[in-house]
Image (cartoon, rainbow, N blue to C red; front, side, top):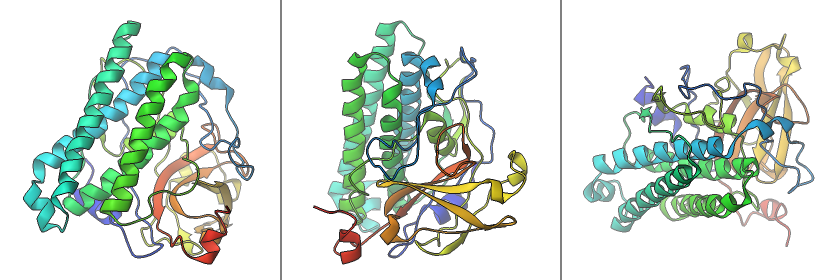
Length: 352
């Protein structure tokens, strides 16, 4: 079971430039009851170089073994998680609870609409899978911990942002082009919801830059596994096959600072930390940094001027140029670094 105190400490927003994180699970979760038809799977890159020349990622070829039904059931798995989260949260927090926490009545009303959106996504995905004659995943058992209104809002921002990255990363896995309009419409809604939460509710930056950060199904499931206790054994295969090692990052992390990371090196094939790199997936591309030494878990985070802005996904990889399922060792852990858009140094990162 995930400890509620861990959620409360890790999902709080801090002062300017400090980060919030989602804690990483140490549980081993059976994603699905039935085995996938192919055990060898390297998904697409989590940061496509097609939108930014500074990105150093590439696509893995193994995604051709994934079926459209597995992609849709993967998306449905994430939608089930979101619906469970919003259903539980809104059942616990009335309009009065939101008001006592300092939020206007319209905030809770909009969360009711978000729940309705996610339920509509489930209905759509289920209907498409039914038309395909495919088996359909059922909801899992979840543990969102014990949260208050503020941490519920912080978690919702993370869920919507990660959801947009999930659809961005999975879109190229679909083989039937006719499925793309539905997937893209859900993606845009997830992004709109994320923008509303971050800008209107939290008074933070509405976006991180010009591009969403796409993540592979396994990278997304590494994040989702923090909240999933167990899935029905009868569930069919999904596009994700496993979660990577958990990566813990202190919430005091700031751009340009030396930060001590935490993951189990003994569960990797690396002889020491010199074999690994820290990858920062940002809206403007991928940044690689090395550990301070072969026996130190400290790494110097990039500065805001180098692009560490908004939502950033941090991973441990065994490469200095690629972030794929083949090179990912631990993470991703999502962080949010608020920034001042009127700062001249920040404005220089977004030329007209």
